[in-house]
Length: 109
Image (cartoon, rainbow, N blue to C red; front, side):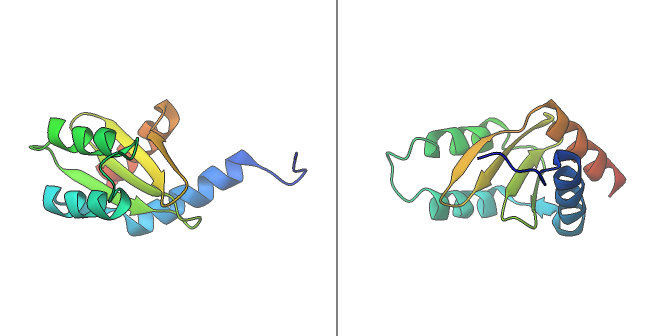
C-alpha cells in the first residue's frame, strides 16, 4: 500500500540521529549473547550469518546502535561491514549508504 507521507530522507535522518545517540562499542561476548537471544534455535536461517560475521571479525571493534523504530545496527569499522536487524522481523547486510553513514558516525566519536 503506497504512502503519500513516506519520505526516505526524513526516515534516514531520524535513524541517523538515533544511532548517533545510542551507538557504543560492544564486545564479542556481548554480541554472542545478543545472537543467542535473537536466534535461540540452531536452525534459524540468520543464526549462522550472524555468528560467522562475528567470528570472521573477532579481533576488530564492533559498534551497536538502535534506531527509534527498533532497528539494531552492528558495525565493524575495521572491515567497513555491518548488519541490521529488527528483532522478530528481519535482518540483512548494511548497504553502501548505510555503511557510509556508520563510518562517519564512528569516526566522529
